[in-house]
Image 1 (cartoon, one colour):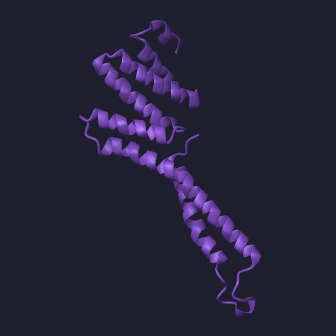
Image 2 (cartoon, one colour):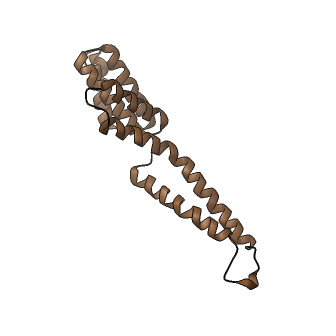
Image 3 (cartoon, rainbow, N blue to C red):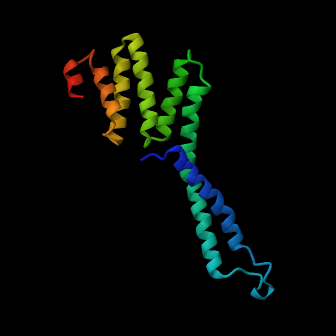
Length: 163
């Protein structure tokens, strides 16, 4: 299952809040001299828990952020004439975040677009491979089934009818 942009933001915000909160909870209480210079055990445990949760959230977000960066750079920084550059960025994004069907679908659509221009059966096969890998993650993607049917039509009309 892939996290959407707003879900990633929520995780990022929670991580950003939990790290300073962990440090504040684990720090000695300055305003209460009677409590001593050491924090209580419960404050240390809560602080350590928040610190671990924040670090775990950051570790989970790193591949999401990298894949998202590659995906958007493929569209915004790659010239339209550099098809190989765009496809390689989309390919890398789909490999960094293999659970995310969106990156696989975008790669498959670009490969299918190129296959339509060149009428290359091998290129259509690559596009079908990406779509099949996306459907293995989430089989309820109707547009991907439709794209597969169109990709099968020139090579095997019977398979196109099944999709």
